[in-house]
Length: 339
Ligand code: CP
Image (spheres, rainbow, N blue to C red):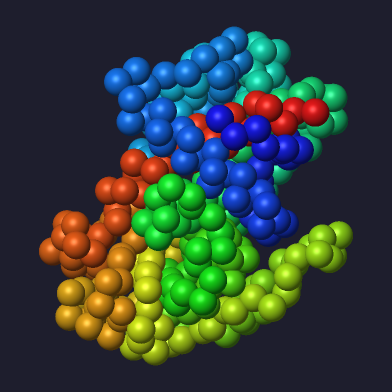
């Protein structure tokens, strides 16, 4: 295992991640990927530590992937299901988190449909002077850091399996297509991919990609991290073709109908005709283009079923597989960075 310095106790956002931190995650994940290829896929790294999955919103990939990652690191795991918890009796989220703290939890992995809940729990853990690390596993429309980091790992290992690093994406063109307005995955990916020096092209109908999104990087930039490079290359398109033209990677996003409070689209059929990714549409891209999707997928809406299942182009299975190694790396780094 690479012996790399790590000082972050909570991981809530990628907005202030530094290039060295991305490389630390990528290299640590590569080591764990090797562990996962062995016959015995378990290491004693987090033996005696407790990882609690506090998922207040449904999840298949993220929750199970964090649980498996924790188990592969020999941690004890606790899983919280809101419907059968004391939340139904009126307990608050912070009191729920405090209960897990009192049981000896070391790392809390938190998902919630409202932005800011993982931050509120992290602040409460700090106020209580605990050493618990809080991981944002997706909060509202804000961020989904582990998804963006596993996406980064997936594309970087494709470019160099031995030594995945951020700089491999410099000069690459990456299109992010779909429901960008509601997407925490897009927001986290914009941070990581633009930090690499890649050109990131967003494409969606105007209702799902408002013009003011152009100010996203500027608006969210945190003034206390002035050493962040601001020459990030982010482009907006309200049609698909300019984003796909010579793209190296195409990331499609799920239409989040559960978050759409008004009619933002004429019909799913028309959306697929204008923005759905298909084999025919990939002809605009580089010949060796690859397609990603964070899942879950609306088959035949944001991506055709045939393309989703085509291993020549689709990295969707690799994304899920990479998720375990990347989350092992994140839990390992958080477990080692408590100071
Ligand atoms: N990509 C993702 O977050 O999927 P889940 O909602 O299944 O965790």
